[in-house]
Length: 458
Image (cartoon, rainbow, N blue to C red; front, side, top):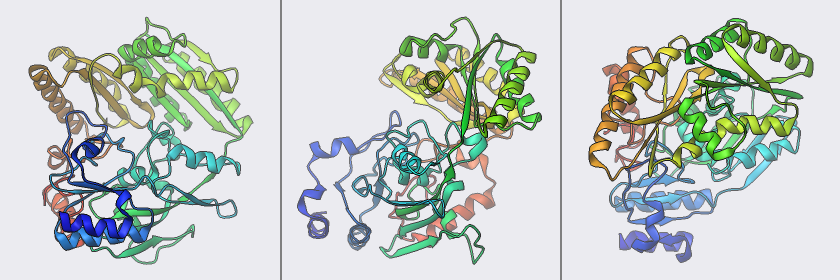
């Protein structure tokens, strides 16, 4: 390790390398509860060439590498492994160019997601993916995890907006994948292999993103329900009516109470569910869709619908959903934000099962999520210092995963596998598919030095 530290200081400068134990503590964990491990060193490169040099040095000395952005991940993807080098990308944070003619934006991986959308907004464009952490998470992390967001129903996830990547491979070589062409079917789509690979196949050093024209109008509504089933039926009916809103989000009773206690925005405290509905686009289309969604919601049991009068009130209403995790996290010392997805017609059954499981295991669980695309976030409010209670948490999580898979769902819709979910991955994939993923990892990283032990063991 001393030899590696000398090489890193030579390549990046002594002030860019940390190795003292007290300096390493902030880099020993990410946003995932219970998971932490001290790295051997942290380096902060400022260019692709420096990243490549760090990788080559680590390979030469046989030291594993864990890439890190803002550390907001929720599956343990950037938690260090013993004796590893953390390559922290936060200083490669420049938004390099916005190209309105081609509707693209080129950026380094350390740029904050919300800043990318703001840069696009100066040209009356926008970057649609909006994970809940968008004000602090980096685009490199979003690409590595294939992050989703509240607008995913209409606009898709990160993968749908990545046109090109610059990647440092496990041997330190640099490759460029994809381009600014709208259509390109030459060879394998190699960039897609790295999107969602959680830092196990390469280190992303530059991203070319697709942008869209900013919608001319938007309408935001909040519907309250006495039964969760009615909220789920409303979502199904909206989709069946061939309306694709930009947002269809829900909060259960516990989450509503926590959000109102936190934000004081006037949410009803006696309902079982809230449904946040947003439509955007041409003003005439928005008016028609909003009226139709309101009609559908009332026909399917909504007892009240609050419609935003202006942008300020729209922001207030949408904050009910965007503040859900923050509000729940105030209740107990440890917050475990889970992430499962089921087919939309199974949503009501899945939400009911989560509530039943929480009661059976004597746990506090608030559930919210992206009802429009079936992505649920059961959030466990607990204390990781209480070994007995944490045992019940893990039993409940295991039951929720089993139910998710039985309903044809997936163990993660947007948070990734990392360390937290890798034990469940073989339950979702057949043996041939699982073996194929391991074959790809071994082919690109035969020494297993890039984020080893994440997603699966080689």
